[in-house]
Image (cartoon, rainbow, N blue to C red; front, side, top):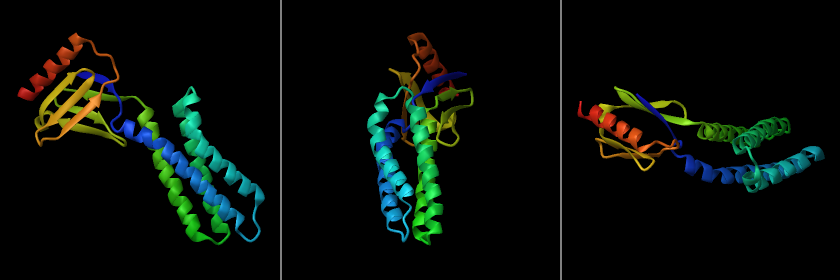
Length: 196
């Protein structure tokens, strides 16, 4: 049985969308600022709070590269956004604006999903090769692929390639440094499992 660390599938795409999601949350907080200001008796503290949170959410992606612990800072910002959006739903519901409150709940749950996905991406992901199958990480669970579903499996140049019998191809970037000898052992193991 072999086990090695990979870069999580779809990590690059999700990390590229990270600044966009923070920007969208910032724009949503700006709309909350306008909505909180337009009520009959506006709460100026809340208006300023939404304004500052919107600005912080839009500026955060530009400051992210300067931080040492990016996953923790990103997770903290996402949790703040989610909690404030869900709390603002109560505020708008209390001011008889149920449509906006439902929108806040939907946006809060969407950002909570994004926070969970980003958390999982920053966690180490491992491929496990056993005598019966290959186990790959996914966002919510692990995906098990039987050797009988595969045409070819190879590890070369820090890329783990899985060729399925239905002509699908999956390539995963390997994060561990695997020596040539161990790489040949893994390829020999995979070839032996495919011939059985």
